Image 1 (cartoon, rainbow, N blue to C red):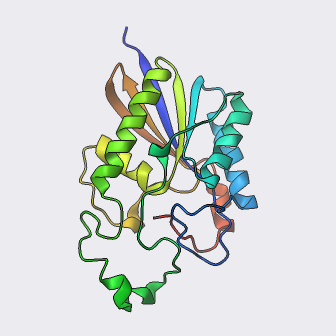
Image 2 (cartoon, rainbow, N blue to C red; image 1 turned 120 degrees about the horizontal axis):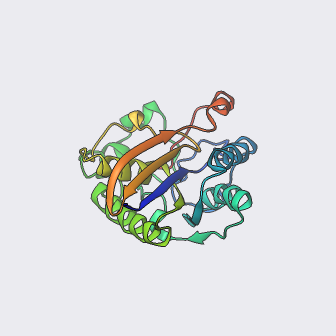
Length: 212
């Protein structure tokens, strides 16, 4: 019989960000109270699974989300830079629909396929594939959780499904505290699943500001 291994890509919960800053890789952006509840719901959704490894992006919001999983399963968190948020030249800015009229913004939007305003999609895929392979090997025959961010998870999924990498950011299926599950038979990906354990809490959230 072939060996089945599952790698769950868990997006962090809601971030406390009252000023609506595009926080990217900035430190000191922590989960809100709602975000902490989201993390707990995600951990409870995973309960009963055979989780052998837990990896996390080193950013605060990801580590705090991973802690809920660590508490649920009694496993330690291993930080990995490859799971970090995508680089973005708009980091630290507050953007709105009117921002597209700003010459300082417009000059960075010349190539949506790379994209010109941030880390290349191909580079994000490469690092996510690298870490998924490492985690799959460690959790061989069992399951693992990697806590990351919306764009890296979405890129990993699009690559897994052999879809083009450029896309409309507003159409990403990777909501807060969602779980994208990659199931492998030996080394072959056989299915991609998606769940939103914290969906009931989304209505509490105001307008969301993506990390990248």
